[in-house]
Length: 394
Figure 1 (cartoon, rainbow, N blue to C red):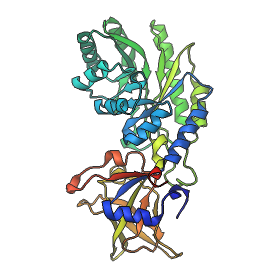
Figure 2: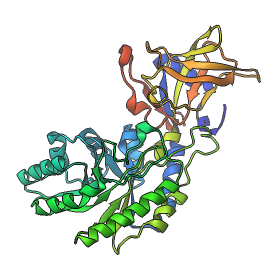
Figure 3: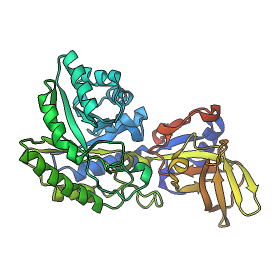
Figure 4: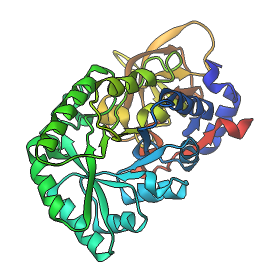
């Protein structure tokens, strides 16, 4: 096998599963558990730091159960994710609910289940939450999501903290929002929420976020307001190029930035919403080679998986580390790795270096545990991919 990622399963076993079910997701729970342990170690002496798993990254029930068992909270962006978190055993008091378009039904469901906090992204949303809280004779805890106008230096489609993004409130709207909330009988503002983007590798941007939060806290206090909690979002990136060498992000360095740069008040709690950095490296998309097509200027490697199974390359132009688990020998070739979907954007990688491949070879796309299975679709009337775990073979 190529590396320890597949230590509990053989290529023949992968091939047998692929022949039966088509492209599928393989999860190495050992990688996930080691990642969770690294988070626990990095925050062991920081009891005021609370990590919520961003369910949107991967809502596979078995993964959610393992994450819940590690005592993380849940960050949800839909009523369905709130339900998935509750079903997996997450305490309602550990669930935060974000999103620009929460429906009446979703708000009601969250209030009835007593979640920890709504991350509020507009004044109209605040007013609707208050109406439903009044109807249910309860108090809704909210944090205002503020756009700090900090550039995350990441892909434009996953940048979220700039003024031109659809998320959150502009900084100049923070105080008016706090004033309005103070007049609503069924609203309690418990903090501020921020999220500047995803797949962030330049950790210096988090220092800029901390400094902006410090400035905003001073503005709050000058107006007689305070925040019990500060939610700094998530966005920590992972190494898509070298998943074997760097399977776990440097969580200590990440958390230390907030420890050293946030000017916290006595008793103030800090919340994090990490998704990709927790689950990305534990998952791989497994597929097989259908055809090798000789073009006039390039070679195509056509596999039986497409953007219906892994949409990130088509949507974001991202490239996942690909490996041929069947090929033997040292001869190699460059391929455009493409799928069967009837769209020109169904391309995993161009001019990609792989061992000389043949029909039936098993191809794995690594670092696919985040925004892989959860974003799969049935376009072209394809079936959704199944999932298998290393523990299925022990």
